[in-house]
Length: 402
Ligand SMILES: Cc1cc2nc3c(=O)[nH]c(=O)nc-3n(C[C@H](O)[C@H](O)[C@H](O)COP(=O)(O)OP(=O)(O)OC[C@H]3O[C@@H](n4cnc5c(N)ncnc54)[C@H](O)[C@@H]3O)c2cc1C
Image (cartoon, rainbow, N blue to C red; front, side):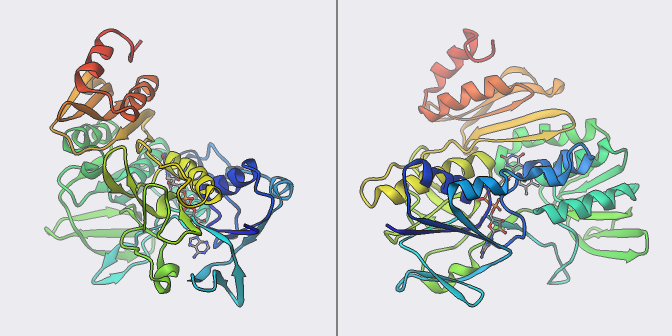
């Protein structure tokens, strides 16, 4: 293999290129990214960048010198528009870039709020540019309305509260975060908002937003109107797979991969938010939009590409993520499809607890508020498919929460 192209200059793409060099690949590597910026850290964008604690310019993962040292050619501000598997080329602008190996790492884009059947221009938060615009807008606002109580919407609400704004969050579901942490824990996340002075309205559909200079009126389907001066939408994201459409690869909600992150062509692997892969740890196809997943999959995709078909290792990640809201560290690992969710340490009312998810006789998930180390220990149990009774016994014996 002489030429590897990585499409997407984000976290997964970065970790893939670094792994390629670490594993001894000495051919040409080109990383193509649609944004003008090289790979940068997104988690601070909804947290310290909005509160002014972090300079957005300091979110870059690596310096220009690093890419020169690795001999990685960065082509930034360039979108790949097409993949041709027959000729093994990707098209960017007027160029066709040939490859012997390809890593698909194009991530996901913020979903736009649809109003009156049309995608709206209500601000979203995905990129450095979005974060700068939102940070500046928050500085001149008094009442923020956040549409969507997912992790990004919740973190924006938390940051705005820290800045002293009045905040209303409008969520379509009856309980926020049900899909990602389950209903029981979602209720506790809702309580965390309310405890911190955020007004949370659940089960509500936004049908229109009236705009006047300095004022926004968010109209709900049930007739209620919320007055604010800034609106932001955090209603999830969509995988960036448009450029793969002509290649004949399966890409419904993410590019379909096997457990080796291979997309069904021997020279093409995928990693990060864009990949829907078969996860042998839980026996399901998953797509997750989490930092740790992007890091681990980037490395694994690179290693498997170099190893070649039949010689790779499966990626059995535990779907770990964290979120920081109102000074509370929230963490989760595993899956939420469970027969039982039980608080095994601490109390929800204190927003400091550890909860376990049981399916059959196995521990399949763990959620924590403000118990970082116990969650990491629990994650290891999930990764080795520990039994429920064993996990409970370890908690009781003080092995998980010291
Ligand atoms: C505001 C925010 C806060 C977050 N906070 C947390 C957190 O607290 N904890 C956590 O676990 N996770 C968090 N995440 C998620 C985490 O940052 C992502 O899962 C991670 O960045 C995914 O990496 P990726 O490389 O797959 O995608 P990305 O980082 O999105 O990188 C993909 C890159 O590919 C580029 N691209 C797309 N299409 C093309 C194309 N056709 N041609 C060329 N380039 C293209 C994109 O422009 C982008 O730069 C957060 C995300 C956001 C947006």
